[in-house]
Length: 255
Image 1 (tube, rainbow, N blue to C red):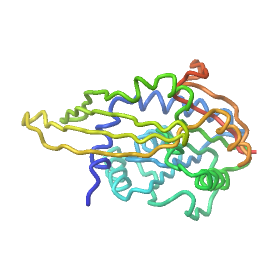
Image 2: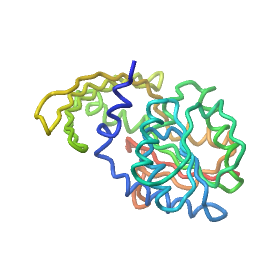
Image 3: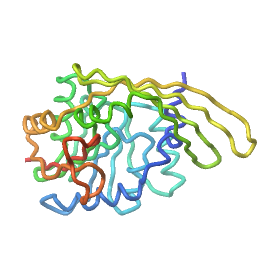
Image 4: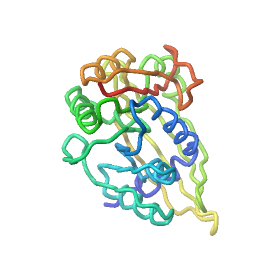
C-alpha cells in the first residue's frame, strides 16, 4: 500500500525553515578538522536537505528506509536540476565503500531507533562512514523538556499547513510513556486541493519515538567514539539548551 506519510511528507513539513537549517549545517561543518565536501544524510526523507546542500556545492548521499521517500527525493532533485545520490536502506546494514566528511540526521531520525542495541548500531555505523575529525549533526527530543511541556504535547493540537496547491489541517497528539522513555505520536490529516476547493484526502499516521535525556545522548555518543562540541535547543548557534528545552540539537565530532 502506498504510504500517505511519504506522499504528503513535504506538505507535513512545509512549516520548517529548510534554508535556515541548511545554513546552520554549513556553519556546523566548520567544526570539522578539514573542509567538508562529502555529506551523508541519514534518514533523508524526501530529500529537502540533501538537495539544498547539493545546490550549495556539497556532494551528498541521502539514504532512507522508505522506497517511496527516495522516489520522491529523486523526482525533486531532477526538478531542481541537481544530482545527489539517493539510496534505499538501513544505515545499520548498508555497505558504503567510502568515507564522508560530515553526516546529518535531521528531524528526529535517531528517535526511530527505540532499542538500545539499535541505537548503538546506528551510531557505530554513522561513525564508520565518517573520516576522523568529521562532524555529525542531529536533533531529537529531550525527555525532561517534553515532560515540562507534557500538557502541550499530550493535548491534541491542530496546525494548518500549505504546500504548492495543497492545504492540510494536521492534528497531532503525543502519548508519552516517561518510564520507557517513548512516545506514541498520532497524526490525523485532512488534505484540501486549493485549485478545486475540494477535500482530496484524509489519513492517519502513528509513530513510535524514543525520547532521550541529555545524559543518555552524551553516554551513547561517547561509547561510539564521538566528542560532543555543541548542545543547542534549535538550529541556531544562539539558541541555549536548558533542562526544560523540548528539543536537542547536537554537533559532535568523530574521534
